Picture 1 (tube, rainbow, N blue to C red):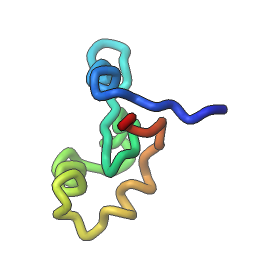
Picture 2 (cartoon, rainbow, N blue to C red):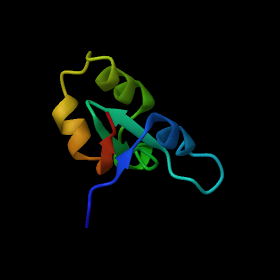
Picture 3 (tube, rainbow, N blue to C red):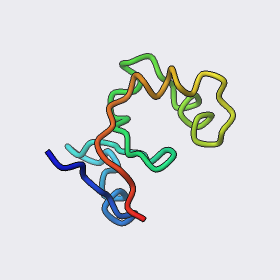
Picture 4 (tube, rainbow, N blue to C red):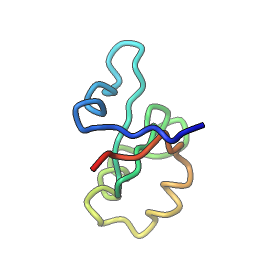
Length: 72
């Protein structure tokens, strides 16, 4: 299966509203963060990853599902 590439406009549609999943781009990869709280990941931890302030970045990202890449 080909890897999905998301434009920024497409990614913005996956905002968790209604039945839609919530996706977030981190370092060029697009992750499904819909169930992050159920996986023990807080919003604070996600923001620390995004802003480069997390010492546990790799461990946190391993818990999330990669759904594609951010298009250039």
